[in-house]
Image (cartoon, rainbow over all chains, first blue to last red; front, side, top):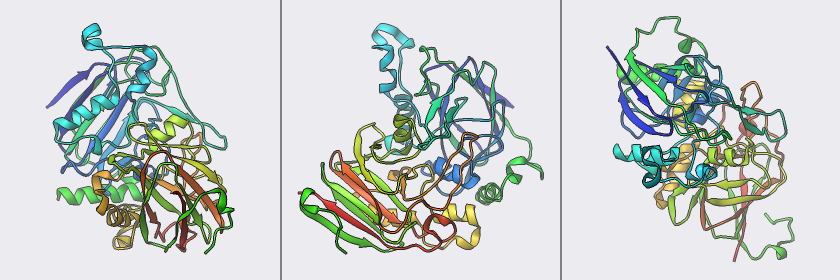
Amino acid sequence: MSWSHEIPGGSAWSTPVRAGRLVTLTALGDDANASVLLFGPDRLDRLNVPDTLKAQMSACIRPPLVLMSDRGLALASVVSATQPWHDALTGFGHDRHLERFGPSSYATDRNEWRRSARLGLVSELTKHGLGEADLHGSVNFFSKVAIADDARASLSWTPGHTSAGDQVVLRTELDLLLVVSTAPHPLSDAPYAPAGVQVEVAVAPSTVEDDPSWLVRDESARALEMSRRVLA
Amino acid sequence: MTSTLPTSTLGATALDTVVQAGDGALVPVPAGGRLRIVDLHGNQAVDTLLYDAHDVDNRYSAFDTIREQQAVYLTTGSRLLSSRLDELAVITDDTCGRHDTVGGACAQESNVIRYGEHTRHQHACRETFLRYGAPAGIGQRQLGHNINFFMNVPVTPAGGLVFDDGLSAPGKYVELTASRDVLVLISNCPQLNNPCNGWDPTAVQLLGWWD
């Protein structure tokens, strides 16, 4: 039992996903970007990137880290990924980041018009009774923003980090609302050619004792245990 | 406590108060006003959020701020941007050198994850944010990712991140100049389980200058 959906490049989409599912994101072109927001079962609790990073002492998202919520729950585990680095420090794009491509509108460009990640994400949130107040730090799957070894930890977008066919697999640990934008990464300096992303949802096999996300750190295991209690 | 500054150059002193360890404050600062946070005893994390005083959904955004300055640490010159990319304030003085905005605030729930169930009922920054934010309509949904003044969270090219001993010392301060009317929501961090407060949370001073 599985299903999939292709999000075109430059679009936004959302879907509920039940606990215990594998969500596979597949880049459909080079330099794809999937800016992802996550909400827990009550749609108030949401992804907390700072808590996720500090609890697991990482400056990026990678397997087998656990994506944690404001309320200290494991929302999803990163089961596998073809790249070891997914940006979570630089947020999603705004209208301002599309200005360099010139004006675009539905009237002139029909469904190829350029819309920002923020616009699409807020639209998706609003469909679920949420809105601007519920925006939070995103995980930008498939994108790397490199950190320099200098006094301010300078950042630079890494071109060529992702190729068509690259994948990330998440396991949902609670019933989630998954919100995705495939707009270009806001620090990308490439021509406008956003790649699509396929989302496939399938039932996850039962978690085994040696699951890497349970074993990677005590903090990861405690977050997973708190979610296990919610479902118990 | 008196300021060591030549306050005559800064306008009237509008605020001079001490925030005890584990306490907080909601400080309205008008456009052009300056707010100084003084680390009285050294190595004290001051968890801070900023809001457009006229619309709390236009709030400080850590990751928009980081991206637009293309650097992780905050210091003099850092523009503190909102989730709509409006400039809420600018760091106009900083004797500490750098500040964190990646590490977030402590919460009872995240303390359980980081340190274990025995910390569930220890005081935490989110409790302070919710208490002092409530009169302005700042609730759970309005709590974005915050600044940790005086906190040292180095990140590395290899993707590492740690909570390290602070770079601050007694008397170091950071000063914000408001770019519009803002509300500054402060939690003087009560965390006991890591070195962000030198294992011993202490008081900080708030000094404000505006007409």
